[in-house]
Image (cartoon, rainbow, N blue to C red; front, side, top):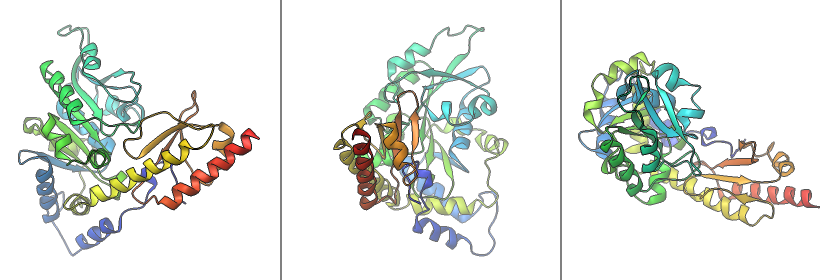
Length: 344
């Protein structure tokens, strides 16, 4: 099966699997006290600065929850877009496990602005009201849009002015950097982000994410929070080996660039089909479209994809590191045929 439902559907990249097999050599100290983990952390410092401190975890939800717990006290809150993964796709984990309230903002494209942040910082010092402490943004966003470095810097400056911190959910950070033609650090440490959830699973890894503290003071005690949040791997070398494969060279960029290019190609093909409307700018590896329901249901069994907004019949099509031009063209041809049948 090849699908446009999610980049999580994609297989693991052979270089990642080879790195894991290479780490499977005899015994190694557990819980991250191994040479592979030491090397992975060194690589991450190379991307995000020598002061950066990182913790490897199992998954994106865990990375986000550990990040929130490291910054927020029980009476504090997180400002986020209403479409943010922490709000709609983590089963209430930020509220239930991190124990914080989410202050959501409706956005047309998944992106927060400084004015959005200012509007949610209210009743400061009022003991009857939750106190905003953290702003979280997703790069690239759940809508496939991305923040420029200047936009992220403006949010960081606003957050810091108001006494808040800035967290970035970077599950698709590689796609944003590849699209902008810049390095990972240019979208994070260079623009004032305090803590990052760095993803690799959607870009060709088997499992594993990292919590990267750009503000070292926030890392104090974080290793205990990782353990409490059930995110400490006993055989940590198998997480670390994947980070070495993905981020030491340019595999992260190659994979993300392929996914982005296929999304751009898909958008070009879909724009040619009468009755299909692209609803968001295509800036990463996602394409959001409105299409006739009958046509969507006709092609979905062969090319699975998700409905993003049932009220608008908006569909989400995701490309992956292993999506090919032939697959994109075949899907577009099938959809064009289905749309033609609906109009007939």
